[in-house]
Length: 222
Figure 1 (tube, rainbow, N blue to C red):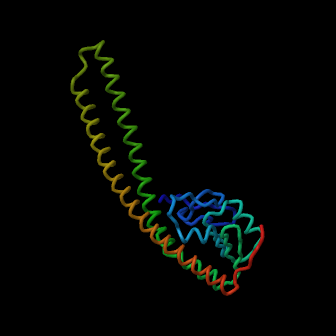
Figure 2: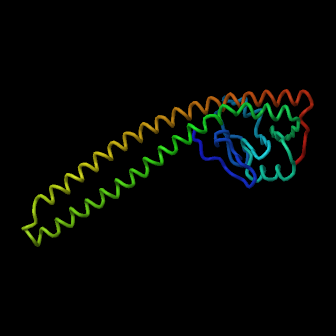
Figure 3: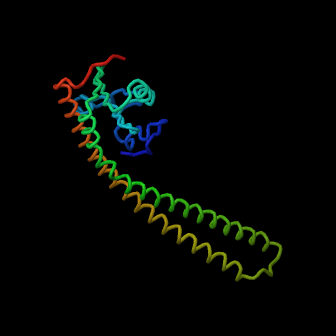
């Protein structure tokens, strides 16, 4: 599962946690599933918006829904949509507990940011080598063009250019090897994040169930 950068919405410092909790369309439509398949967590918890302080995390809620909820409700809250029913939970212990479920995912942020910096450095190195390779190839082509008119050009110049070109291409292969290793690291990190996401969603589902049973979730309209 891919994990795009967090979405910032005005005072909302993190509107979508790692982007990994979204399933279905941005408007909250349930994803299509093969006949006989099911996802008990997302079937029972179609969408939520968890707002605490300046931080807002959401799943299957549109940007417009998030902004509207934060405009309408101040302070900390957990908004839930299950099917066509919507609930608001303002109980602070419940909201705080919900945030703890996602702490392990957020703990991966430094590792992910470090990986992104390494990927960016490799991409910059790759661009520099591409430019160097292109420049050398242009020099070789220019020399070939001049050789047609001047047979006295020293062969050593051509040999030097070809040696430089081989060196650049060898460096490029090394960069590509490091890039593949980083891709493998990213895949492994995504798998860890996916496992933590599934655990967090299951815990949040159970928490919302308890809040509903205790009467802590207030039904609200559109």
